[in-house]
Image: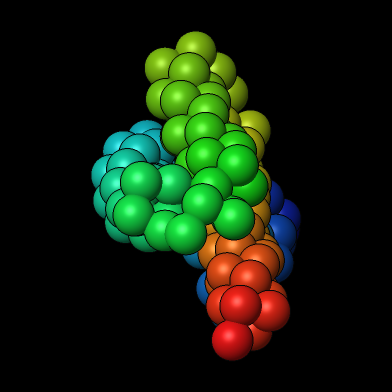
Length: 125
């Protein structure tokens, strides 16, 4: 009998470490890194939205407030997922989706807010 048939784990191909799905943050983490980085991202993205709400011209304040609340809600969702979902891979993927959603919504929100602010400034001048 050859050595390969004795150990079935050797017959399975190793996962490609270059694929995104095989990264340790999506395979082996407990989710703490997602919570820490999500919290930092949430804080750093809420600051400009808060400035637009309280210090801006007011034209983009409703959108800035809405986007800020959505970003905070996504971070709260990350906390809930981290402490309630037992299946590790599902938990990590949902955390990644929440984090990417936070980034996309914040980016689009700040872009649209800047367009609104600039359009208002152009019409005044």
